Length: 449
Image (cartoon, rainbow, N blue to C red; front, side, top):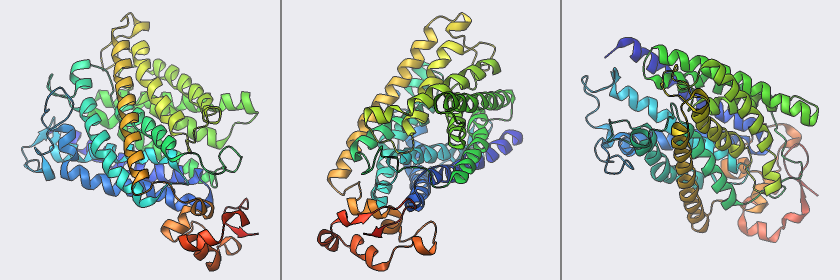
Protein backbone atom coordinates (compact mmCIF):
# COMPACT_ATOMS: atom_id res chain seq x y z
CA UNK A 1 0.00 0.00 0.00
CA UNK A 2 1.19 3.48 -0.89
CA UNK A 3 0.02 6.10 1.61
CA UNK A 4 0.26 8.95 -0.89
CA UNK A 5 -1.90 7.12 -3.42
CA UNK A 6 -4.33 6.17 -0.67
CA UNK A 7 -4.65 9.74 0.57
CA UNK A 8 -5.31 11.05 -2.95
CA UNK A 9 -8.01 8.48 -3.71
CA UNK A 10 -9.67 9.11 -0.35
CA UNK A 11 -9.88 12.78 -1.34
CA UNK A 12 -11.00 11.90 -4.88
CA UNK A 13 -13.79 9.69 -3.56
CA UNK A 14 -15.08 12.61 -1.51
CA UNK A 15 -14.83 14.90 -4.55
CA UNK A 16 -16.81 12.51 -6.74
CA UNK A 17 -19.43 12.06 -4.02
CA UNK A 18 -19.84 15.87 -3.90
CA UNK A 19 -20.69 15.82 -7.60
CA UNK A 20 -24.10 14.27 -6.90
CA UNK A 21 -25.27 17.10 -4.59
CA UNK A 22 -23.70 19.45 -7.15
CA UNK A 23 -25.80 17.83 -9.85
CA UNK A 24 -28.87 18.21 -7.61
CA UNK A 25 -28.24 21.97 -7.47
CA UNK A 26 -27.49 22.14 -11.21
CA UNK A 27 -30.65 20.27 -12.19
CA UNK A 28 -32.70 21.84 -9.39
CA UNK A 29 -32.01 25.35 -10.60
CA UNK A 30 -32.88 24.44 -14.19
CA UNK A 31 -36.45 23.31 -13.47
CA UNK A 32 -39.42 25.44 -12.46
CA UNK A 33 -40.02 26.35 -8.82
CA UNK A 34 -42.76 23.75 -8.45
CA UNK A 35 -40.36 20.88 -9.27
CA UNK A 36 -37.09 21.83 -7.58
CA UNK A 37 -37.49 19.55 -4.53
CA UNK A 38 -38.39 16.55 -6.66
CA UNK A 39 -35.46 17.16 -9.00
CA UNK A 40 -33.00 17.32 -6.12
CA UNK A 41 -34.58 14.32 -4.40
CA UNK A 42 -34.06 12.22 -7.52
CA UNK A 43 -30.30 12.78 -7.23
CA UNK A 44 -30.28 12.11 -3.50
CA UNK A 45 -32.51 9.06 -4.03
CA UNK A 46 -29.98 7.66 -6.50
CA UNK A 47 -27.26 8.22 -3.92
CA UNK A 48 -29.20 6.09 -1.42
CA UNK A 49 -30.33 3.28 -3.72
CA UNK A 50 -27.07 2.73 -5.58
CA UNK A 51 -24.95 2.95 -2.41
CA UNK A 52 -26.91 0.02 -0.96
CA UNK A 53 -26.84 -2.10 -4.12
CA UNK A 54 -23.16 -1.38 -4.73
CA UNK A 55 -22.26 -2.83 -1.34
CA UNK A 56 -24.52 -5.86 -1.75
CA UNK A 57 -23.66 -7.00 -5.27
CA UNK A 58 -22.98 -4.08 -7.60
CA UNK A 59 -19.24 -3.96 -7.04
CA UNK A 60 -19.01 -7.70 -7.53
CA UNK A 61 -20.95 -7.53 -10.81
CA UNK A 62 -18.65 -4.80 -12.07
CA UNK A 63 -15.28 -6.01 -10.76
CA UNK A 64 -15.74 -9.66 -9.85
CA UNK A 65 -14.13 -12.46 -11.83
CA UNK A 66 -15.43 -12.42 -15.38
CA UNK A 67 -18.12 -15.05 -16.04
CA UNK A 68 -17.21 -15.33 -19.71
CA UNK A 69 -16.99 -13.14 -22.75
CA UNK A 70 -16.09 -10.02 -20.79
CA UNK A 71 -19.76 -9.29 -20.17
CA UNK A 72 -20.30 -9.61 -16.41
CA UNK A 73 -18.44 -10.11 -13.16
CA UNK A 74 -19.45 -12.80 -10.67
CA UNK A 75 -22.18 -11.15 -8.51
CA UNK A 76 -21.57 -13.55 -5.63
CA UNK A 77 -17.80 -13.29 -5.42
CA UNK A 78 -17.75 -10.15 -3.30
CA UNK A 79 -21.37 -10.18 -2.12
CA UNK A 80 -21.65 -7.74 0.77
CA UNK A 81 -17.98 -6.91 0.06
CA UNK A 82 -16.89 -10.13 1.73
CA UNK A 83 -13.16 -10.74 1.64
CA UNK A 84 -12.21 -7.13 0.89
CA UNK A 85 -11.65 -5.75 4.40
CA UNK A 86 -8.36 -7.51 4.99
CA UNK A 87 -5.33 -5.19 5.27
CA UNK A 88 -3.72 -7.33 2.59
CA UNK A 89 -6.57 -6.78 0.11
CA UNK A 90 -5.22 -4.20 -2.33
CA UNK A 91 -6.28 -2.76 -5.67
CA UNK A 92 -2.95 -1.68 -7.08
CA UNK A 93 -1.36 0.39 -4.32
CA UNK A 94 -4.56 1.33 -2.44
CA UNK A 95 -6.85 -0.70 -0.14
CA UNK A 96 -9.51 -2.63 -2.03
CA UNK A 97 -12.23 -1.08 0.12
CA UNK A 98 -11.12 2.38 -1.00
CA UNK A 99 -11.37 1.34 -4.65
CA UNK A 100 -14.87 0.04 -3.87
CA UNK A 101 -15.89 3.41 -2.47
CA UNK A 102 -14.33 5.38 -5.32
CA UNK A 103 -16.04 3.36 -8.05
CA UNK A 104 -19.30 3.36 -6.11
CA UNK A 105 -19.52 7.14 -6.47
CA UNK A 106 -19.24 6.72 -10.25
CA UNK A 107 -22.23 4.40 -10.17
CA UNK A 108 -24.25 6.92 -8.16
CA UNK A 109 -23.60 9.93 -10.39
CA UNK A 110 -24.38 7.94 -13.55
CA UNK A 111 -27.85 7.01 -12.34
CA UNK A 112 -28.49 10.54 -11.08
CA UNK A 113 -27.60 12.01 -14.49
CA UNK A 114 -30.46 10.12 -16.15
CA UNK A 115 -33.07 11.95 -14.04
CA UNK A 116 -32.59 15.21 -15.90
CA UNK A 117 -34.32 13.86 -18.99
CA UNK A 118 -37.65 13.29 -17.20
CA UNK A 119 -37.92 16.37 -14.99
CA UNK A 120 -41.40 17.62 -13.98
CA UNK A 121 -43.29 14.42 -14.81
CA UNK A 122 -41.92 11.29 -13.07
CA UNK A 123 -43.25 9.54 -9.97
CA UNK A 124 -40.59 9.61 -7.28
CA UNK A 125 -41.06 6.07 -5.95
CA UNK A 126 -41.08 4.64 -9.47
CA UNK A 127 -37.86 6.54 -10.09
CA UNK A 128 -36.25 4.81 -7.11
CA UNK A 129 -37.41 1.43 -8.43
CA UNK A 130 -36.06 2.33 -11.86
CA UNK A 131 -32.71 3.33 -10.33
CA UNK A 132 -32.38 -0.08 -8.67
CA UNK A 133 -33.31 -2.03 -11.82
CA UNK A 134 -31.26 0.14 -14.18
CA UNK A 135 -28.21 -0.01 -11.97
CA UNK A 136 -28.45 -3.80 -11.87
CA UNK A 137 -29.19 -4.48 -15.55
CA UNK A 138 -27.34 -1.62 -17.23
CA UNK A 139 -24.73 0.24 -15.20
CA UNK A 140 -23.12 -2.66 -13.33
CA UNK A 141 -22.60 -4.77 -16.48
CA UNK A 142 -21.39 -1.79 -18.55
CA UNK A 143 -18.96 -0.82 -15.78
CA UNK A 144 -17.54 -4.33 -16.06
CA UNK A 145 -17.14 -3.92 -19.82
CA UNK A 146 -15.27 -0.63 -19.49
CA UNK A 147 -13.48 -0.54 -16.14
CA UNK A 148 -12.59 -4.17 -15.32
CA UNK A 149 -8.97 -4.65 -16.40
CA UNK A 150 -7.59 -8.15 -15.83
CA UNK A 151 -4.91 -8.86 -18.43
CA UNK A 152 -7.32 -10.15 -21.05
CA UNK A 153 -9.82 -11.69 -18.63
CA UNK A 154 -11.73 -8.54 -17.71
CA UNK A 155 -14.37 -6.49 -19.50
CA UNK A 156 -14.56 -6.87 -23.26
CA UNK A 157 -14.18 -3.15 -24.02
CA UNK A 158 -11.30 -2.69 -21.60
CA UNK A 159 -9.31 -5.88 -22.18
CA UNK A 160 -10.33 -7.14 -25.62
CA UNK A 161 -11.50 -4.25 -27.76
CA UNK A 162 -8.83 -2.04 -26.16
CA UNK A 163 -10.87 1.12 -26.54
CA UNK A 164 -9.65 3.98 -24.35
CA UNK A 165 -12.06 5.37 -21.76
CA UNK A 166 -10.02 6.78 -18.92
CA UNK A 167 -12.79 7.93 -16.58
CA UNK A 168 -16.18 7.02 -18.05
CA UNK A 169 -17.13 8.65 -21.35
CA UNK A 170 -18.88 5.43 -22.33
CA UNK A 171 -19.79 3.82 -18.99
CA UNK A 172 -21.04 7.08 -17.45
CA UNK A 173 -21.98 9.69 -20.03
CA UNK A 174 -22.98 7.81 -23.18
CA UNK A 175 -24.68 5.30 -20.91
CA UNK A 176 -26.66 7.95 -19.02
CA UNK A 177 -27.41 9.97 -22.16
CA UNK A 178 -28.81 7.01 -24.08
CA UNK A 179 -30.87 6.01 -21.04
CA UNK A 180 -32.17 9.57 -20.72
CA UNK A 181 -33.31 9.57 -24.34
CA UNK A 182 -35.09 6.24 -23.90
CA UNK A 183 -36.93 7.40 -20.76
CA UNK A 184 -37.91 10.69 -22.38
CA UNK A 185 -39.54 8.72 -25.20
CA UNK A 186 -41.32 6.35 -22.81
CA UNK A 187 -42.76 9.09 -20.59
CA UNK A 188 -43.60 11.40 -23.47
CA UNK A 189 -43.59 15.18 -23.65
CA UNK A 190 -44.67 17.52 -20.87
CA UNK A 191 -48.06 19.15 -21.29
CA UNK A 192 -46.59 22.51 -22.29
CA UNK A 193 -43.48 21.30 -24.10
CA UNK A 194 -41.94 23.87 -26.48
CA UNK A 195 -44.34 26.60 -25.36
CA UNK A 196 -41.77 28.82 -23.67
CA UNK A 197 -42.85 27.92 -20.12
CA UNK A 198 -39.74 26.02 -19.06
CA UNK A 199 -37.31 28.73 -18.05
CA UNK A 200 -34.89 27.88 -15.22
CA UNK A 201 -36.30 29.20 -11.97
CA UNK A 202 -32.94 29.87 -10.26
CA UNK A 203 -29.85 30.53 -12.36
CA UNK A 204 -27.56 31.13 -9.34
CA UNK A 205 -28.31 27.52 -8.28
CA UNK A 206 -27.39 26.35 -11.78
CA UNK A 207 -24.07 28.20 -11.66
CA UNK A 208 -23.31 26.92 -8.16
CA UNK A 209 -24.08 23.37 -9.23
CA UNK A 210 -21.85 23.68 -12.31
CA UNK A 211 -19.02 25.01 -10.16
CA UNK A 212 -19.33 22.09 -7.74
CA UNK A 213 -19.36 19.66 -10.66
CA UNK A 214 -16.17 21.19 -12.06
CA UNK A 215 -14.56 21.02 -8.63
CA UNK A 216 -15.61 17.41 -8.10
CA UNK A 217 -14.54 16.44 -11.60
CA UNK A 218 -10.89 16.72 -10.60
CA UNK A 219 -11.52 13.70 -8.40
CA UNK A 220 -13.48 12.07 -11.21
CA UNK A 221 -10.74 12.41 -13.84
CA UNK A 222 -7.47 12.83 -11.96
CA UNK A 223 -8.62 10.30 -9.38
CA UNK A 224 -9.05 7.71 -12.12
CA UNK A 225 -5.27 7.46 -12.27
CA UNK A 226 -5.77 5.53 -8.99
CA UNK A 227 -2.62 7.12 -7.65
CA UNK A 228 -0.91 10.40 -6.82
CA UNK A 229 1.27 10.46 -9.92
CA UNK A 230 2.03 12.08 -13.24
CA UNK A 231 -0.96 10.51 -14.95
CA UNK A 232 -3.25 12.24 -12.47
CA UNK A 233 -1.48 15.54 -13.13
CA UNK A 234 -1.94 15.23 -16.90
CA UNK A 235 -5.60 14.33 -16.47
CA UNK A 236 -6.13 17.34 -14.21
CA UNK A 237 -4.53 19.86 -16.58
CA UNK A 238 -6.32 18.43 -19.61
CA UNK A 239 -9.60 18.69 -17.70
CA UNK A 240 -8.98 22.37 -17.01
CA UNK A 241 -8.06 23.06 -20.64
CA UNK A 242 -10.99 21.29 -22.28
CA UNK A 243 -13.57 22.66 -19.86
CA UNK A 244 -12.50 26.27 -20.29
CA UNK A 245 -12.48 25.94 -24.08
CA UNK A 246 -15.91 24.30 -24.11
CA UNK A 247 -17.49 26.99 -21.97
CA UNK A 248 -16.13 29.74 -24.25
CA UNK A 249 -17.24 27.87 -27.38
CA UNK A 250 -20.78 27.39 -26.04
CA UNK A 251 -21.31 31.06 -25.16
CA UNK A 252 -19.69 32.12 -28.47
CA UNK A 253 -22.30 30.05 -30.33
CA UNK A 254 -25.00 31.65 -28.19
CA UNK A 255 -23.72 35.16 -28.91
CA UNK A 256 -23.59 34.52 -32.64
CA UNK A 257 -26.99 32.78 -32.75
CA UNK A 258 -29.04 34.67 -30.17
CA UNK A 259 -27.12 37.84 -29.43
CA UNK A 260 -26.44 36.97 -25.76
CA UNK A 261 -23.90 34.97 -23.78
CA UNK A 262 -25.97 33.51 -20.94
CA UNK A 263 -25.11 32.11 -17.54
CA UNK A 264 -27.12 29.03 -18.46
CA UNK A 265 -24.94 28.60 -21.52
CA UNK A 266 -21.75 29.04 -19.52
CA UNK A 267 -22.86 26.39 -17.02
CA UNK A 268 -23.95 23.97 -19.75
CA UNK A 269 -20.75 24.53 -21.73
CA UNK A 270 -18.73 23.81 -18.60
CA UNK A 271 -20.44 20.45 -18.14
CA UNK A 272 -20.15 19.63 -21.85
CA UNK A 273 -16.39 20.16 -21.70
CA UNK A 274 -16.08 18.04 -18.58
CA UNK A 275 -18.04 15.26 -20.24
CA UNK A 276 -15.99 15.33 -23.44
CA UNK A 277 -12.57 15.24 -21.76
CA UNK A 278 -13.56 12.45 -19.35
CA UNK A 279 -12.66 9.52 -21.64
CA UNK A 280 -9.76 11.36 -23.27
CA UNK A 281 -7.85 13.05 -20.45
CA UNK A 282 -5.04 10.44 -20.44
CA UNK A 283 -4.73 10.21 -24.22
CA UNK A 284 -4.43 13.85 -25.37
CA UNK A 285 -1.91 16.62 -24.87
CA UNK A 286 -3.11 20.00 -23.52
CA UNK A 287 -3.48 21.56 -26.99
CA UNK A 288 -5.52 18.58 -28.13
CA UNK A 289 -7.66 19.02 -25.04
CA UNK A 290 -8.31 22.66 -25.97
CA UNK A 291 -9.39 21.56 -29.44
CA UNK A 292 -11.62 18.82 -28.08
CA UNK A 293 -13.25 21.19 -25.60
CA UNK A 294 -13.96 23.84 -28.22
CA UNK A 295 -15.46 21.32 -30.64
CA UNK A 296 -17.57 19.67 -27.93
CA UNK A 297 -18.86 22.99 -26.57
CA UNK A 298 -19.93 24.19 -30.02
CA UNK A 299 -21.52 20.89 -31.09
CA UNK A 300 -23.41 20.36 -27.83
CA UNK A 301 -24.73 23.92 -27.94
CA UNK A 302 -26.07 23.39 -31.45
CA UNK A 303 -27.58 19.98 -30.63
CA UNK A 304 -29.78 21.40 -27.84
CA UNK A 305 -32.29 22.70 -30.38
CA UNK A 306 -32.73 19.26 -31.95
CA UNK A 307 -35.21 18.21 -29.29
CA UNK A 308 -37.65 20.84 -30.52
CA UNK A 309 -37.24 19.80 -34.14
CA UNK A 310 -37.47 16.07 -33.40
CA UNK A 311 -40.14 16.55 -30.70
CA UNK A 312 -38.58 14.52 -27.90
CA UNK A 313 -38.76 16.15 -24.47
CA UNK A 314 -35.33 15.74 -22.89
CA UNK A 315 -36.12 18.18 -20.10
CA UNK A 316 -32.62 19.25 -19.02
CA UNK A 317 -30.60 18.34 -22.14
CA UNK A 318 -29.08 15.09 -20.95
CA UNK A 319 -28.90 13.95 -24.58
CA UNK A 320 -27.20 17.08 -25.90
CA UNK A 321 -24.67 17.37 -23.09
CA UNK A 322 -23.96 13.82 -21.93
CA UNK A 323 -24.78 11.57 -24.88
CA UNK A 324 -23.40 13.87 -27.56
CA UNK A 325 -20.56 15.16 -25.38
CA UNK A 326 -19.62 11.61 -24.44
CA UNK A 327 -19.66 10.52 -28.08
CA UNK A 328 -17.53 13.48 -29.19
CA UNK A 329 -14.95 12.85 -26.47
CA UNK A 330 -14.79 9.09 -26.97
CA UNK A 331 -14.51 9.20 -30.77
CA UNK A 332 -12.10 12.17 -30.73
CA UNK A 333 -9.51 9.94 -29.09
CA UNK A 334 -9.21 8.15 -32.43
CA UNK A 335 -8.20 11.46 -34.02
CA UNK A 336 -6.38 13.47 -31.34
CA UNK A 337 -4.62 10.86 -29.19
CA UNK A 338 -0.85 11.18 -29.02
CA UNK A 339 1.67 8.62 -27.84
CA UNK A 340 3.31 11.37 -25.78
CA UNK A 341 0.33 11.24 -23.39
CA UNK A 342 0.07 8.57 -20.66
CA UNK A 343 -2.23 6.30 -22.71
CA UNK A 344 0.62 5.92 -25.24
CA UNK A 345 -1.52 5.67 -28.39
CA UNK A 346 -1.37 7.73 -31.59
CA UNK A 347 -4.63 8.72 -33.25
CA UNK A 348 -5.25 9.47 -36.90
CA UNK A 349 -3.86 13.03 -36.74
CA UNK A 350 -0.63 11.80 -35.15
CA UNK A 351 0.12 9.05 -37.67
CA UNK A 352 -1.69 6.20 -35.93
CA UNK A 353 -4.11 5.48 -38.75
CA UNK A 354 -7.67 4.34 -38.01
CA UNK A 355 -6.80 1.49 -35.67
CA UNK A 356 -7.72 3.32 -32.47
CA UNK A 357 -10.58 5.17 -34.16
CA UNK A 358 -12.58 2.06 -35.03
CA UNK A 359 -12.10 0.72 -31.51
CA UNK A 360 -13.50 3.95 -30.06
CA UNK A 361 -16.50 3.91 -32.40
CA UNK A 362 -17.35 0.28 -31.62
CA UNK A 363 -17.09 0.80 -27.87
CA UNK A 364 -19.22 3.94 -27.92
CA UNK A 365 -21.82 2.40 -30.21
CA UNK A 366 -22.14 -0.79 -28.18
CA UNK A 367 -22.81 1.08 -24.94
CA UNK A 368 -25.26 3.44 -26.65
CA UNK A 369 -27.34 0.67 -28.19
CA UNK A 370 -27.34 -1.58 -25.11
CA UNK A 371 -28.26 1.24 -22.75
CA UNK A 372 -31.01 2.63 -24.98
CA UNK A 373 -32.71 -0.71 -25.68
CA UNK A 374 -32.60 -2.06 -22.13
CA UNK A 375 -33.63 1.28 -20.60
CA UNK A 376 -36.55 1.60 -22.99
CA UNK A 377 -37.78 -1.85 -21.99
CA UNK A 378 -37.37 -1.14 -18.27
CA UNK A 379 -39.19 2.18 -18.57
CA UNK A 380 -42.00 0.67 -20.63
CA UNK A 381 -42.58 -2.17 -18.15
CA UNK A 382 -42.66 0.25 -15.22
CA UNK A 383 -45.01 2.59 -17.03
CA UNK A 384 -47.41 -0.25 -17.86
CA UNK A 385 -47.32 -1.78 -14.37
CA UNK A 386 -46.76 0.61 -11.47
CA UNK A 387 -46.93 3.77 -13.56
CA UNK A 388 -43.97 6.06 -14.18
CA UNK A 389 -45.48 9.32 -15.38
CA UNK A 390 -47.52 11.47 -13.02
CA UNK A 391 -51.17 12.30 -13.71
CA UNK A 392 -51.87 15.43 -15.75
CA UNK A 393 -53.32 17.30 -12.78
CA UNK A 394 -50.33 16.42 -10.66
CA UNK A 395 -48.01 17.73 -13.35
CA UNK A 396 -49.89 21.02 -13.40
CA UNK A 397 -49.72 21.46 -9.63
CA UNK A 398 -46.13 20.26 -9.48
CA UNK A 399 -44.53 17.07 -8.25
CA UNK A 400 -43.07 18.81 -5.18
CA UNK A 401 -46.46 19.29 -3.58
CA UNK A 402 -47.96 15.99 -4.69
CA UNK A 403 -45.08 13.58 -4.12
CA UNK A 404 -43.15 15.26 -1.31
CA UNK A 405 -45.69 17.49 0.42
CA UNK A 406 -43.23 20.35 0.25
CA UNK A 407 -42.41 23.48 -1.69
CA UNK A 408 -38.97 24.79 -2.44
CA UNK A 409 -40.05 28.33 -1.64
CA UNK A 410 -42.79 29.09 0.87
CA UNK A 411 -43.70 32.59 -0.28
CA UNK A 412 -47.16 33.70 0.88
CA UNK A 413 -49.10 34.40 -2.30
CA UNK A 414 -47.52 31.53 -4.20
CA UNK A 415 -48.60 28.88 -1.71
CA UNK A 416 -51.37 26.54 -2.76
CA UNK A 417 -54.57 26.70 -0.81
CA UNK A 418 -55.34 23.47 0.98
CA UNK A 419 -58.62 23.21 -0.92
CA UNK A 420 -56.94 23.28 -4.33
CA UNK A 421 -54.22 20.88 -3.24
CA UNK A 422 -56.73 18.42 -1.79
CA UNK A 423 -58.81 18.40 -4.98
CA UNK A 424 -55.85 17.76 -7.23
CA UNK A 425 -54.10 15.26 -4.97
CA UNK A 426 -57.17 13.02 -4.59
CA UNK A 427 -57.76 10.98 -7.77
CA UNK A 428 -61.51 10.75 -7.24
CA UNK A 429 -61.85 14.46 -6.65
CA UNK A 430 -59.63 15.19 -9.63
CA UNK A 431 -62.09 13.43 -11.92
CA UNK A 432 -64.90 15.61 -10.63
CA UNK A 433 -62.86 18.81 -10.90
CA UNK A 434 -61.35 18.81 -14.44
CA UNK A 435 -58.03 20.56 -14.96
CA UNK A 436 -59.34 22.90 -17.65
CA UNK A 437 -60.31 25.41 -15.00
CA UNK A 438 -56.74 25.79 -13.69
CA UNK A 439 -54.15 28.11 -15.08
CA UNK A 440 -50.42 28.31 -14.47
CA UNK A 441 -49.04 31.73 -13.56
CA UNK A 442 -45.47 32.59 -14.49
CA UNK A 443 -44.35 32.12 -10.87
CA UNK A 444 -45.10 28.41 -10.95
CA UNK A 445 -47.99 27.42 -8.63
CA UNK A 446 -51.64 26.84 -9.43
CA UNK A 447 -54.36 29.44 -9.19
CA UNK A 448 -58.01 28.66 -9.63
CA UNK A 449 -59.60 30.53 -12.52
